Length: 101
Image 1 (cartoon, one colour):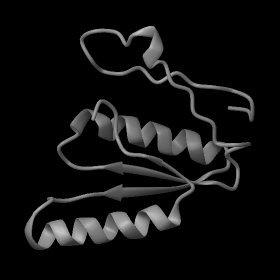
Image 2 (cartoon, one colour):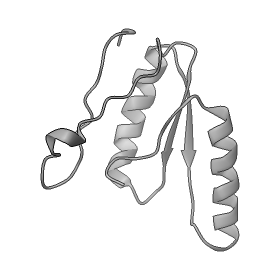
Image 3 (cartoon, rainbow, N blue to C red):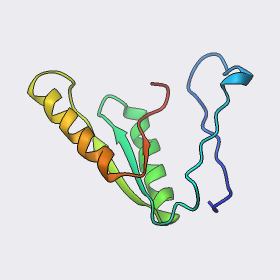
Image 4 (cartoon, one colour):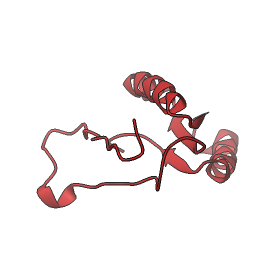
């Protein structure tokens, strides 16, 4: 992808988005040199394949990719997940946290 290319992300839902729901995001320049964070968890089985593909594509465009696997949201593991998310969010320029969430 070049600096002016765009991608379309299809939303996995039954009904297509309304025209006023169309969104465009910019990373303000080329991906090279940016740190892209991809967040997932083991419950998102099909999303694991998406993250693996995106990780390769972002890296091919010169980005550094930081994949974060999160755990439970309660108890000791929930505290660890929140701490991991806080740290991860400080390390990245761009974050992708899932599709259809």
